[in-house]
Length: 173
Image (cartoon, rainbow, N blue to C red):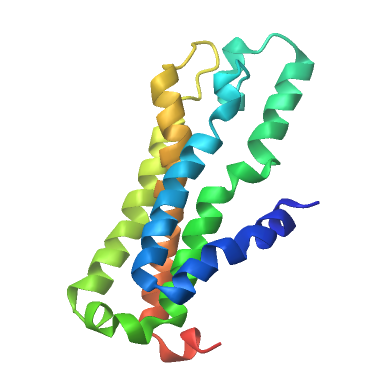
């Protein structure tokens, strides 16, 4: 099964709390994002490399291929961006509920600043792991591996959100 299909199967578990209680749903989504950070790091606790950035710890081509597979193809690697995407979609489709927030003049400015700031932070942070000759600091790698996805997803999500809350035509399509 593809990653997208697997994540679509669990999407009702994320949407149902939002549907019945926005406040509880957002708390649930926040908890889900934090839990996703830990879930994607589970292979590391079993002594397996979690990303191709740990190339100095990889001893064979087979182990490298499996590391790439775990990094790119397993569904838990996409959970964070999927959950943040659901939250952004919920905010866009229910923007009437949040008009008191979205109508403030500083909100679009903040969202426009978040987009390049968060995305470039994730990219620059990831560039620290390019030197394959030196083993990276494992704590720094693990933090980037989870928090970098949150930064990137929130950055891209803020761009989509600001475009949709200020454009009537775009949000109704």
